[in-house]
Structures are given as C-alpha cells and as structure tokens.
Length: 221
Image 1 (cartoon, rainbow, N blue to C red):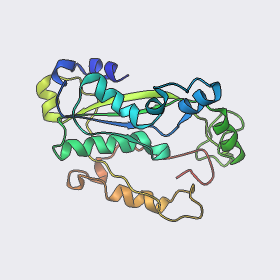
Image 2: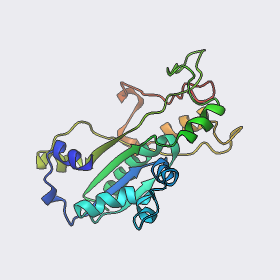
Image 3: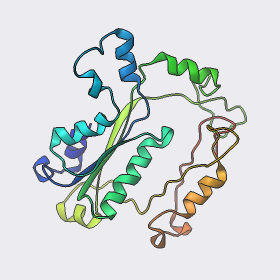
C-alpha cells in the first residue's frame, strides 16, 4: 500500500531514499500474532519481531530506506488520524521533508468479535444506525490506507498529485468519564477549538463536517 501511495502521488522512490521521511502507522489490533499462536505457526525466528505493532511502521522505513522518525500508533478508533496528526507535525517542525501517514486493520481473531458483542458494541443486524434512536452498535472493517504528506509549496513545485490540503490538526483525550470507553462531547468541542495552526482557520471556512459516530447511544456525538 505504501508503494502504491508513492506511485499515485507521482513521487519517485529515488527522491525519498536516504532522506528524512517520517512514517506513522495507526494499528490498533494484534489479530495477526494472535492468529499465528492459535494456528501454531508463530513459533519461528521471525515471530518475535514480525508480530509486534512497531514493525508495521519499521517495515516501510526499512523497505524504502527512509531515515525520518517512525512510529506505530495505537489510540483505538482514532489511530490512523492520530498518525496523520503526528505526520503533519513532523513536517511543520522541520523534522521530515515528507511523511507517510497510514492505517491498517486485519480481522483475524474471532475472540474480539465475541468480546465486543458481549459488551453490546457490535451491531446485531450488520447495519450501523449512527445518530438513530435505534442505534445498537457498529460494524468492524479491515483494510489499509496510506497517504503521503508534504508541504504544499514543495508538492506544487515537485508536480505531485494533490488530493487535499491539511490546514490544521488537533488531538486530545476525554479524561475521566463514567467508564473508560465512554466518550465526552465536551472534550471533542475543546479539541476543535484548539485545532492548529489556529490563526489560519475560522468556523466560516468549514463547509463539511464528518462527525464521530459509533452507532451506539453513548458513542454518537
């Protein structure tokens, strides 16, 4: 997926090899090493490192000879967006010339489905009814997504394919709520007000909002 992202952006790999290119991968599940243990296929010399979340980011840096900061990020549902936030900040601070932000999820462990179903987090019908009075859970999905991030002026200069411009990002945590899995509307509001870089964005500039919604009575904001 990372290689295809380079191709789609029109960025030759020769331009990135050995340079300060950051890699940030959102990865929340550990289904792959769990599946290996269940199948008794994880007892080999590669399982110790290959089954860790950190290797998801390090594999990209190693494969393409990238020398910028790299990190695997686990913040549950927001993992890939937090990875994007880190990728943006490493560019804004001048730590990286280019940054990769990615997210990956593989559904290989049935035990997770069982646990989430018992907690009434999984939809009983296979449908998500976000912001609906009949909301009763979400549907899990799997896949991989990768975006390449550069300063706008540099991307224009290099003739890269540009899909969007990120004007600002912000991250926070709900703090103490009724239980550890319950989110906070107040915290989400505060995060939007603290978005950075703040001076360049006003509320009137926003045309589209994609809200956070888990399809549950507690999680829909």
